Amino acid sequence: MKTTIVAAYDPISRTIADGGEILVYFTKPERGFRKSREYHPVILGGKAFRRLLRDHGGPIPERTNIVISSTLQEWSPNLPLPLKKNRNPHWFATKYNAAPLGVVIRPTIEEALKYAGTVSEEAIIAGGTSRYEETMARANRLEITEVHDTPVEGKKKFPEINPIEWRKKYMERQNGYSFVTYIRVASLLDKLD
Ligand SMILES: NC(=O)c1ccc[n+]([C@@H]2O[C@H](COP(=O)([O-])OP(=O)(O)OC[C@H]3O[C@@H](n4cnc5c(N)ncnc54)[C@H](OP(=O)(O)O)[C@@H]3O)[C@@H](O)[C@H]2O)c1
Image (cartoon, rainbow, N blue to C red; front, side, top):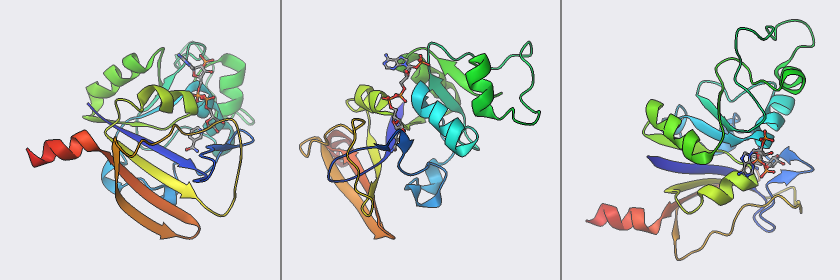
């Protein structure tokens, strides 16, 4: 299974969150996702997913959301429908510890990747810090959005990108963002074989 990490951070401090808020939302076009990858399943940690529900109002659209959590449960018919006024997905998740319909919950990254393998040949890892740290060693590709105009310094950081292991392949700069793709050196060598 191919694994792509997607993250936005301040390129100086490598901070990924500003007071808990994700720096740039996955759903914005400038997010650095390539069109061809938009429909692969996305794996998120429990905190990143709750932030997404709170600030974006729902899971990442048009793809399978797989959340690593030991406390959230998947939606089931014995739960009330989160449709009434004020019952937005974040309120619902907080009250019932349950994710919206269609979101897959798995206890570990291994289980999450196994599930992703049943729906696609590639999984996108979308944070937060713990998820990046545990998947950096196995990722094939990093799709990074560097956020230049709003310097932030916080505890939640992206891991170091070791230049011996990673090569910058594409870089595009626009509107205060740089979109950078890194490919694992081993993947590049495989292509030469
Ligand atoms: N800039 C970006 O691209 C970006 C993207 C995503 C997130 N973020 C930021 O990242 C921050 C969250 O990162 P985070 O590392 O604190 O949290 P996280 O990886 O999003 O989620 C941590 C949660 O995952 C669950 N979990 C299950 N097994 C775990 C394990 N072995 N180790 C750790 N957690 C496990 C726990 O949830 P349960 O309690 O439910 O079991 C835990 O609270 C937020 O501030 C968010 O804004 C930034």
